[in-house]
Image (cartoon, rainbow, N blue to C red; front, side, top):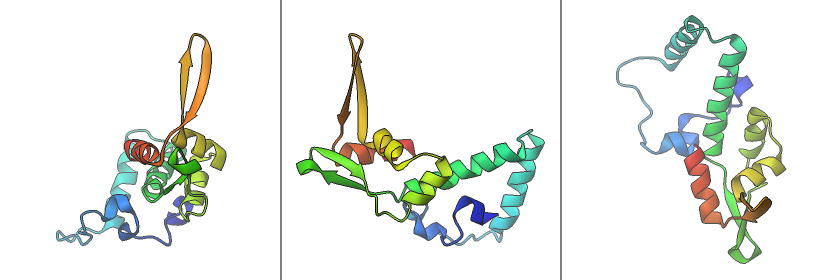
Length: 136
């Protein structure tokens, strides 16, 4: 089942989001697989369909991959774009069901509407990175 969420080749140490503490071993003897089964059972009791559960885990997995997504500075630092060579990009796209173009637009641009007009502007790398951090 872990294959479905594109996590097979990764551990908690591989994601920025989960590697910050440096603590990966449980001291209480609880196994992650047991906790996962209990979570699945609880979701079922609460009425989550198998499809809804899958969607929930896909989003959680995408967030893990998003924590490793890098942003590149372009046009002399005035604009930014997602790193199209980042190995976590494809899993993000697949798990969220979006295109590279859409993800780049969502993370590296913002829209202003004034007087019935709509303007799209790029953001600098630092702002795009802060946006990704806020998203996750």
